[in-house]
Image 1 (cartoon, protein in one colour):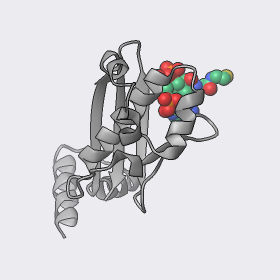
Image 2 (cartoon, helix red, strand yellow):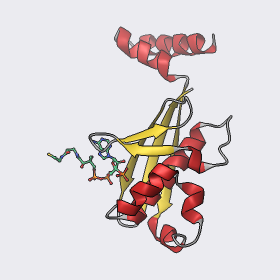
Image 3 (cartoon, rainbow, N blue to C red):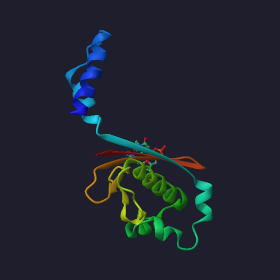
Image 4 (cartoon, helix red, strand yellow):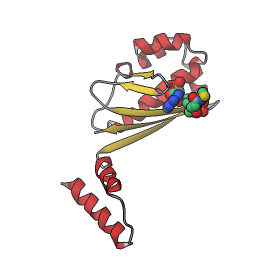
Length: 141
Ligand SMILES: CC(C)(COP(=O)(O)OP(=O)(O)OC[C@H]1O[C@@H](n2cnc3c(N)ncnc32)[C@H](O)[C@@H]1OP(=O)(O)O)[C@@H](O)C(=O)NCCC(=O)NCCS
């Protein structure tokens, strides 16, 4: 109900300003009110310090640990997984995640990141620079 009221108010505002949105715009707006986004920024230089010891076993799933061992640039790989999982955590405000190893982020046929976490439908995007890694997550709640 709240979503419908919200969309109606937005549509009313747009009409007031003589803007004529297409029906697909309004459908998109109606769908997006239940989505949530999260973002996280990681300093790659901090990751380097934690690579020894058991740190990775607390962050990466078994599948990710295997991928980590063959990556040309393992530090950015870990930074990307941490940033993406933190971003996912920010989406799931009502479901605190205490174990990052339960989330697996693989790469699809085009290199695109794909999230595997219970029945959740989650999209993430990751980008690396020399010292920083950023990730954005979107969940359909
Ligand atoms: C995919 C692409 C956008 C990556 O951009 P980039 O600046 O090199 O690298 P970034 O650090 O910003 O992004 C890397 C991350 O993007 C993600 N990624 C890779 N390929 C992707 C794709 N096709 N779609 C969405 N995300 C992708 C991955 O998560 C990757 O990080 P990860 O390997 O740690 O998981 C870039 O290579 C591109 O434009 N590719 C499309 C064209 C292409 O494939 N050209 C080459 C053949 S013609």
